[in-house]
Length: 534
Image (cartoon, rainbow, N blue to C red; front, side, top):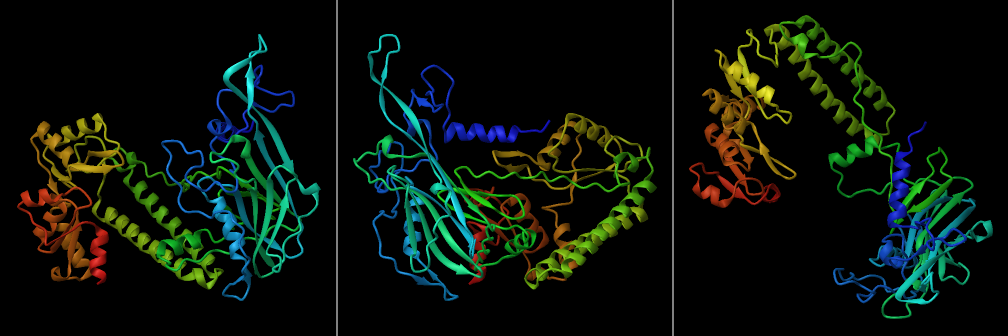
């Protein structure tokens, strides 16, 4: 049996926030199956998928006390069509598109739009659906008399498919075509944007063309559950990728990663969804964007378990070395596969691919050297008290347990070296702070009387190793951090300049009280970068 829980959840959310949500109770559903709202008017019951009258752009559009005033938006007035030339000489009718898109993106939107790419000679059909509600007095079912200050709102469904006839698309000369949907007040618009290759870019819009009658908008003037779906005979073309002026490494990496992912529509005041097949034959508006994100499942290497038991005196350390070498070999095979893929990439992606492959090679080199160290020095890692263990190392552990603390105390009662990664007392998380390695070491000292040697900050070992590896002098080095007792103290101990940023733990008051002083103080890392760019 297929798992349809996701579809059920999406359907529930849409019924709850967009509607309609007919309830099979007496007096709550019409004979034709359409719902009757009784407890709340439509704009209270539903909050999305609503199109307001065309001129609903001022701050008096039936706003509630706790709602914000609207920003400046298009006022819905007719504008003269003035074609604008793009860089490639094609013409785009900016005013037509801009007005409708502004109304689509308005706070009290009166339109929804999607921009798509249509192949030359294609036939495009449309299916529009919406609903309206009217306000009628509620009657007492027992007496038939009108209930004071009680109303019901029966729904009427609207549907339009242009008689299943292909839409007449506007030419560059037309610019804009309008299709009134009977006398409902709904209107379907098509705006010609520009040409690209063998396709033309259009913006399709469903708008509430009703003028606003009163200062405060009524439910009867609005359309609810508004959406439309476009159908293509040839299949829609993908939209060209918008290019950013600033293309950093993250952007370039995403371009490489998603190079085969195509975008077929841009929503304005709504999202867009389309056919998943090889040829995209339909595109629809979607009030709530929905996308099925596939889980990222880690791959497994057959024969590689990296079982901690094998690294203990009760396991086979030789098996662990063999598995580690197999893992490195498989990683090498994967990198070689990337090199093969890289050969078929277009030039724009090859530089980024080379950067990632080089990073993978660096990672593999470190892995192989680590395996050699393990094999030469015979280092064995255990997580339980063992007589053969000679060093206890503690660090920040997000999965710490009472059993781990107990085992550590047992080992610290023996003649062992005691190391800790860092003396930080807390680690920042989304809701505040949690105990870091420094707090754990204090707890263990209270229990065992042992104090660890910290190999991380503020000890200078880490900085000395980095300077030696990179061949950089202390005079050309600065350490940046937000903690006085680790980051700044580390720089002072190592004899390098320090920058304390006030965007983290340390405050100006802390710096004034501390004997450890940074070389410079900045409000944030951004301010440091700005200063360096001068």
